[in-house]
Length: 222
Image 1 (cartoon, one colour):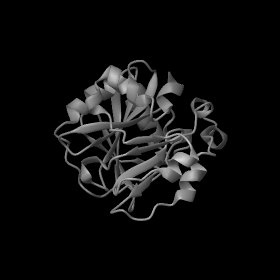
Image 2 (cartoon, helix red, strand yellow):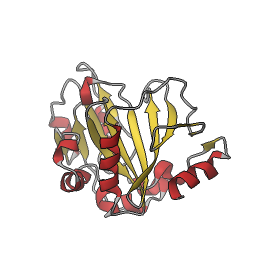
Image 3 (cartoon, one colour):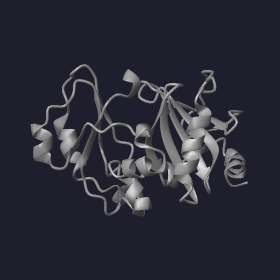
């Protein structure tokens, strides 16, 4: 199951079965070979990423030129070789093309850490492709005074109007796993599941400050 949900195409089948297709990011196209990439007319605004890896995204804006060579290189990636996450080892290389959600190139990115089907910790990535910072909250939207990897954001974040819906979705998607992170996008009214992450930060994330590791562990695992 962890292998299945690591594939950015196949995870949408899991999301559809568990909470409904309306919470999936729509798929515009799956490109399964380099010739398909070279022949494809990419939308003017879109998100392009390998379905078999993590953290690699091309955002196309206003019909700007596309780095086809970079996309070709995506096919040679085996994410297991760099991070040793076994769930990526056997995934077939392919490219997934998706729309820009909510017509917003700088959307907030919510990552909900769940333990045994219970949402416990929320990470919010701010200005992800500009100058990324992070904020952390508990499931009641109480802000926590630490971060992981990126510096703690200074912007005030209001509690999303649809937070309870997001937590309910995360709960249902995570109930078949011990520990998992459900990654979502929201404009405050609507939400979409971006992916489900088995091993956050490839298990190499650094707590800022170091003492926050104990605090986060207590929140997640009780």
